[in-house]
Length: 172
Length: 73
Length: 382
Image (tube, each protein chain N blue to C red):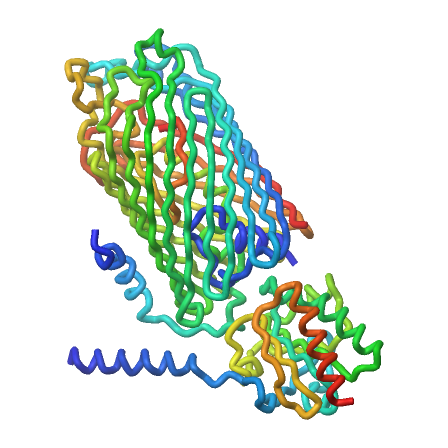
């Protein structure tokens, strides 16, 4: 009886450990598909596939995550600047607030120009195996992940911009 | 005191609690991040309370290491 | 959105080592915040039927607190805490041995006016899987000078579901009682305190978490109260405290439950139990009301006697009510409101002691204290 309980506990713990070892989407792999509604607009879902041919910065964020909030205006400025220079680049920011209104409230205070999607159930961060908030994926025009970035510090903006310019230079 | 003896009550407590533990994903931490869910939701209030009870009661120590002294007990 | 200013104050304002917000334990503050709070603390007068001599008015204290939390670079957070306390009133000087129901307490003479200032600075470094901090502090009164320093470290693992933390601090206090010659008091004494803790925090599910901590403190030196007549205590004291905290969010009610239990034991012979419960009720996005209750029970110290025994010389003896067996029940109500980057808070608390509330052993004291406390505070995030 006791031995059975111990075996069950060990199996349970092993399953727990394994479930946390889900293969995270890694650099070099094809980015998993994403099709989600816009956060601030009703209407048909937007998919990652629509942005084939462009460099995409796919970012998972939430209103309760301070570094996420720091990254939004910084990435907004970078996105606008790069688009002004004629580079085919877009930011797809997936809000994972379980109550989307919290994400909308943040954007009302600090609006952005890029695409913001809503995923309150968390199916897309699960598909990507996100391990920390925020996590962003730099995806090339062929849909391959070139960089996975966890966390966000102010100086990361410049590094990401340089990476995108390099990618844009390579494809031209 | 042996290190294991010191950690033992903590591990027992966590173990008892953890019979229902579930892995929470990184994007599912919104509720846990709420200010009212912090172990210390109001640091200034905690500092004041700790000081008052340190002066008026014989006990000492909570979730933090001791700070400086005062002539109040 | 109300949470911005509070995220700054709670997740980052970890001035007290060992407490980690498990959800975002590894991010330094992203915004700066300042807070100010003023509190009044008033003890009930000593009942006339107990007062033998002196003023029945006990302590009235006003406390001003100030806090600043700010990021330093991209990986550090700095917290500065400061407080100023102004105190007036009298306290029991000694207790006469009398028959039950007779007046026995002699209060200290003219009401004192005292001030205390303290400053505390903490610098925390955040890394991928944890953080660590150095803290220094000082507390000054005209008869008491204290310096302290400490270090603490926290480490997350198990997909950030579990955090182990530990730390230690030391403090050195110098005591120079006023009117020493007049009242034949000691002069120039000192006391050293060292303290260490370990803690384990565990996320249980999306809505709840738990923390258990063990705290040990050792005092050495002059531990006696120099303002009490015929008060003598041992020159060392070892204290243990085991604290457990449970936090649970109730989604359907938009409220959080806090439960805390602490067991304490020391070699003065004092054992105690502390139970805390609080209910953080959100009302919309801008208001939060928090009722709280606390139960406390302690045993008497081995050398406590309700009346001073003047025949004991050189042997530990004290009639200080704080070393008696008693219980205390307190209730509090806090109201908080959030407007953009400003938050206002008001709290009132009533604390009542009684020998009968105790579940522990030992004699009690007639000089137990009740008090009422009110606080008003404001915080600003920038």
